[in-house]
Length: 577
View 1 (cartoon, helix red, strand yellow):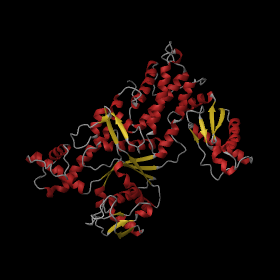
View 2 (cartoon, one colour):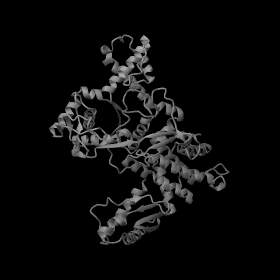
View 3 (cartoon, rainbow, N blue to C red):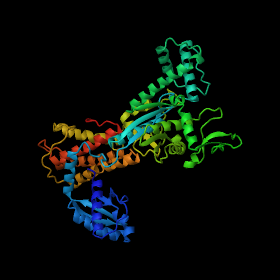
View 4 (cartoon, helix red, strand yellow):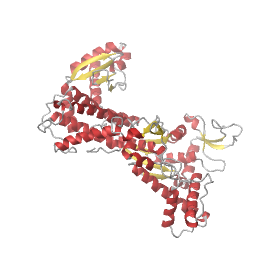
């Protein structure tokens, strides 16, 4: 039950009726009309902009038009207690107390579907995220984007969209050659007691490669490791397998499982790059030309040369992009274009890419290529995950660098756990930097949002446990003759916002709204719980070890929403703390 959609439909029916009576004029479509959550300073439940939308076509001031519409709303709906008008023309609606009783009854009956947007057309999404080079463990820089991609997937799945989660494996190019050589030198170190060449800056020095090397040696006793050239192809495959196994383990520790792992190397070997370039050439999106020095590059050091270029400026990019290097090899961009053609060929409605902050400048060129290949703007949506700063004792925190020159995902999880990592990484919008404060994460107070939400669920669980009622089972209430207090109605109002939270999170791909919402709901609950400390009548369980049906329903509603939200975020809702 989405009361915002429900009242939007009612408002539209009312103005259609007024239009038929000749009292107002309607525009060609009513898409601009909405029902929203009003600011807290107004003592109301729903706000609508209908008067402002209709003002221009009716040639009347919004406030004058609002008077007409407000009167019709009040007369048409007995659930409305009062209607008020505020500048510049918003109509604010406050419901009768009985409305919230009926609301709670409807949600208890439809607990399994509450929050799901049943009006939204269901789509098929491909979400590509993480896609870190398969050369070692995931580090903190990958962590936020990984969680963002996973929770976007969960929100869309909750809303009954079809979602495929994909990891693009960059297993082709110079970095893979250097990675394979690094593994080889670790193998030589183990088998022949040779010193690893730490002075070679192209190599990967991390100690995790020793484990890779030992695994390869023990699993492949027949390989002769005396000649690198003779085994380089086989060793590359084995080394990447080890890296992917480690990456999957890192992701699993975060609670993330991808559906597909797509190999760049296979795309290249299947000549998908050549095929996509031919496609672009056929449509006259490719030409031979020269490009100027990149921003920040010394023009004197830049050598202009003729290259195969993609006309990305035709699609809003600031310059055309090279598809081939001077030695004839394909650029990384060319491989990426082929990969996105591969995605398009799989007939998804939308492609979503989660990119790190260092790839923000890459968005325009890749969206340009997708526009060129699909003739459909908006098919690809890119979300950038900004940087994370680790804070401890109010100072930047550097954890162990034992595995290389960065902090690994496993290091972070070992320090604070999966739940805290996921919840806090998601607690701010992805497009702003995030301070991950270890002191707050381990605090048992309202300054730790995860603890505060989990404690909300645990407190409700304790009530049901004392009453010997299974919190996980549906409630069956015969009579709904409730008289909710103002505190209880405030909680019900917040619960009514849950479908709106899901709708916006899904449409805008902004899952940070969910932990923020859960914290606000938990705060209202804890404030209400604390009233019982001084007033026995406010306690959920009375002196006879009984609970009233209205309070039982309220607790069940809160627990359902918290559990649902925590499932989407991918963290636990413990029954005891």
